[in-house]
Length: 125
Image (cartoon, rainbow, N blue to C red):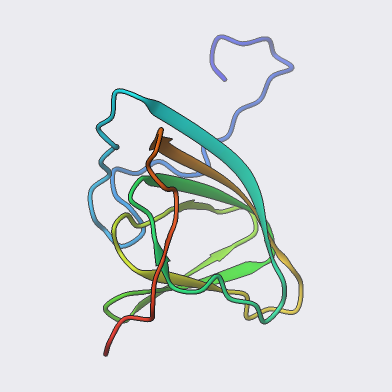
């Protein structure tokens, strides 16, 4: 918030050069970019189902606690107030193991005619 009025406060939530699985951040190469911003609510006990993203995806956890299973056996947990740098082209599944809804604000940095989400069968062990 440097340079703003004294009534404006800023706080870095996360600053990173890698996705949640450690892979480097890369952006979609397209001449027709499209940004989609949405909220996602995951009820207690619910799952997103296995899926992948061909585009960069970032989320902020407004409430709850989200467990993300990533293909290959890694599991990461995110709680209220944390940012998520989602994996790209990697299968993953979000699970709400808590007793309150998980509420997310999600930002997809994609392109026209490029899907934000691709549903998939669970990965084979």
